Length: 88
Image 1 (spheres, rainbow, N blue to C red):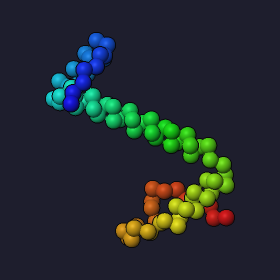
Image 2 (cartoon, rainbow, N blue to C red):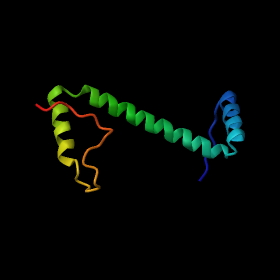
Image 3 (tube, rainbow, N blue to C red):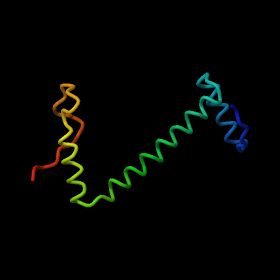
């Protein structure tokens, strides 16, 4: 089901230029832009929540992550991208 929405002419012009440049339909680009914004809002909120954790809560979360390391048995015992915290 399609729905008609109003956007300002400058935004429409930018979207049209991008669609031409990328050789993709306007609706596809608009869908992608909406999804990217949704993800950005989610990750911003997640980062704010993690930043608000106290030291004890953060340590508990790290302990939980440590317990799950290797749970998938994918052979990746040490994740090179996950920073390690000092042992207590």
